[in-house]
Image 1 (cartoon, protein in one colour):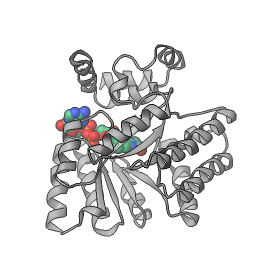
Image 2 (spheres, rainbow, N blue to C red):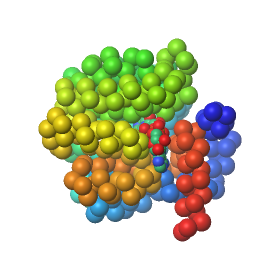
Image 3 (cartoon, rainbow, N blue to C red):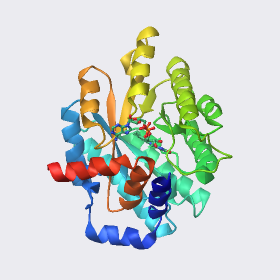
Image 4 (tube, rainbow, N blue to C red):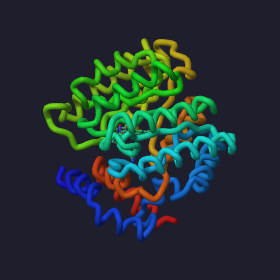
Length: 301
Ligand code: FDA
C-alpha cells in the first residue's frame, strides 16, 4: 500500500519526469515500453504479429496543459495510424484524452480526437479511448458517445473498480469495449476498495458483455480471471471472434504466446514515445512486484 502510494506520487513529479527523459529508457522501462519512436514501436508490433499477437499502440503522453503540445500529439497519433497501415501491421490505437487537451478545453479536445478517429476511419483502424482518472471520466464517456454517433471505429474502457461500472457497461453495450480492473489511485466514494469485490464486479462485467455486447477485450494478467473466461465462453458457446485477451507489452509474455497458440485472440498494449515515465511508475504502483520482474529481466539479458 505504501509502495503503491509512493509510485503513484512519483508518477506525477515533473522534475523526475524530466530526468527520466534525459536518461532514456533505463531502469528496466525498456522491457515494458515499445521504444521511444514509431519505427521502434512498429518493429515490436511486427515481432508480436509473427507470434499471432495483435497490438494496440499508445503514443505516450497525458495531462497535457499546453495547446501546442496537444496538437503535436494529435499529429503524431495520426502518423501512427499511417505507419500501421504502411507496415500492414495487425494493430489499432489507444488514446488518452488528457493528452489531447481535455484539461484545457473540452471542445478543443473533442476536435483533436475527432480528427484522429476520422483519419483512422478512412484507414479502417479502430481507436480505443483509454479510461483515465475519475475526474475526467464523465466527460470522456460523453465524448466517446458523441463520436459514436458519427463513427463506428471507436470504443472505450470500463474500469471494474468504479461503483458505476455496470451502468457504464450497459451504456456502451453496443460497441467494442475493453474491460479492466482500474489503475488509478481513487477516492473511496468513487471506487470499490476491496480487491475481492473488484474481482467479483470485474467477472460480472465480462460475463455481461460477452453475452450481450459486441466484442469484448478482457484486459488482465490475472490467471484466475483468464481461466474463468475460458470456461465461461466454452459453456456458453461464445465464438473466439467475439472477444480477445489484452495484456500490457512485456508482461506475462509466455502466457500471451500460450493463449495465442491455443487459438484465442490476444492483443498487447504497446506504449511508446519519450513520455514513458508516468506510465512506468503507474505499473510499479499497481504491482510493486513488477519491480522484481523488471530487475530480473535486466540481469538475465
Ligand atoms: P492484478 O494486478 O489485480 O493481479 C491479479 C493477479 O494476476 C496477481 O495476483 C498475479 O497472480 C497475476 N499477475 C498480475 N500481473 C502479473 C505479472 N506482471 N506477472 C505475473 N503475474 C501477474 N486501467 C485503467 O484504469 N484504464 C485503462 O484504460 C487501462 N487500460 C489497460 C489496457 C490493458 C491492455 C491492460 C492489461 C490494463 C489496462 N489498465 C487500464 C490497467 C488495469 O486497470 C489494471 O490496473 C492492471 O491490468 C492490473 O490488473 P490485472 O487485472 O492485470 O491484475
